[in-house]
Length: 289
DNA sequence: GACACGTGGAG
DNA sequence: TCTCCAAGTGT
Image (cartoon, chains in turn purple, cyan, yellow):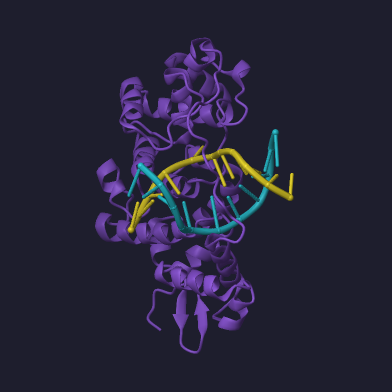
C-alpha cells in the first residue's frame, strides 16, 4: 500500500504554495490553520496575502488582532484568525520568534490541536507523526476498516491504525501528506474516484462491495436563523468598516433583537469585537481604549 | 462526548 | 432549492 500511495502522490500532488521548496514553517502553520474546515481554493489567495504581509510570526504579532481578522476575509470561523495572532505572539514570547518544531510545543499554542501539531511537525520539520485529518481518516476507514465513513470523532482504534501504518522516519512525512492528498483528490467523501485509486485492489471497503454506511445519519449544521448566521453578518459589517461602527448599523443586519444582542455579546466575549464608549463597536485593538 | 463555531461551492 | 461538506479546536 505504501509504495502505491507514495508513487501516486509524486505523480498527482497539487502544486500548492505551502508545499513549495521555499516554504517556511510559519507558512506551513498559517496554511494549516486556514485549511481547518476550509477548502484549498478559498485558502490559497488569502494565504498568499498573509505571507506577503506578515512573512514572520513577529510581523503578525506586532499587528493589531483586528487586522488579522480583517485580512482573514470570508474564510469563516474568524476565531481562527484571532488565535493565529495569539499563536504568533506566543511564538515571539516563548520561542524567540521561531515556530517550534516539536508536537508538544506546537500543541501548546492557541488554536493548535492534535491534527495541526502533528501536521506542522511532520510537514514543516520532517518529524514522524500520525497525521489524522478527515481525509486520512476516510482513507483508512475504507482501505483498512472497510467502512464508507470513519466514526464521528477520532477513536483509539483509528490512532492505532494510523500509527501502525506509519513508515520509518525517512518516509513518514511523505506518507502523511500522500494519504491526505489521496483522500482529498480520489477517496473523496461523496463520489470516490475508485477507478483512479492506486490502492483500489486492496481496499477493504471496495473488496466488500462498497457497502453504504450503517451508522447513524450525520446531521448537517443548521444555518438559517442561527446565532452563527447573525454573528457572521455582524462580523462582515465590522470587517468592511474602516473604523468603529455605531450600534444602529449593527442592529440593521438582524431583525430579532434578543438573538442579535446575544450574538453581539458573544462576539465581544470571544474577543472578536471590541465595544467602545458611545455605542460604538470595532474589531479588536491591542491597545487600551 | 456533544456542541458551537462561518462560508460558499458542488451535486 | 437544499443538503452536504471542506487539512478542527475549545469548552
